[in-house]
Amino acid sequence: MSPTRHDPAGPVRRPLTHGERVDWHLHSDNQLISPGLGVLRVFTPAGSWVVPPHRAVWVPAGVAHAHQAHGPAELRCLAFAAALNPLSLDRPTVLALTPLLRELIAALTGPQALGRATLEQAVLEQLRAAPELPLGLRTPRDPRLRDLAGLLAADPADPRTLAQLGAAVGAGERTLSRLFRRETGLSFPQWRAQLRLQHALALLAEGRSVTAVAAAAGYRSPSAFIEAFRLAFGTTPGRYQRES
Image (tube, rainbow, N blue to C red; front, side, top):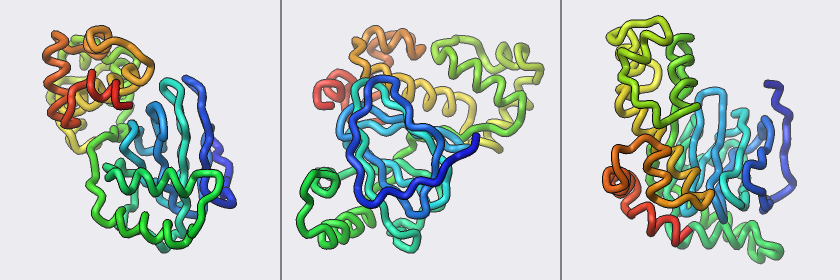
């Protein structure tokens, strides 16, 4: 990975086709990235973040990152000087957007944004109260954990237990359990649940049915998927898909 430096002259609004990728790059400024349409997956060396509509990801200045679209998507980006960091975030973080904040981003990335300085100040004020959302997965450093994460990323529906996966990567269950907590801040069940939710968001953006997404993401039934999704996002996957 050799990220290029890219500092756009102003706000960015760019359509992306399904699967289109914006390769590794970094910025001198902080960036607020939000999909106007579809779902964006944001990658950094430290992990990946899934950003659905009505959400945004804050990427601090100097952090190398790449984007990939799931479903037809629209990339919207705002840049703020490195000194302007209303939540004092030092890592990429997914934030919830209020309807007002979403409209402000839409206005600033539109073709003719009037009163830009005032709108940008309003965005910063809104960001100070924006809740952080647990939509990221840290990339493990331990090679055994990386191999295990690769197996599950390739097939989130893989039903194997941690002990069975450990046999495939050459590590014991207790060792892997300890490593998961130390390197990702999550237990293995929490990490796998987060991975499955990320996968489900991407598949919903591609137009898959709730039943098909539940099976592909490894849930034992559509009702189990609906309940897990509702607990994580406060809405059902069907309603989320319609509103997105």
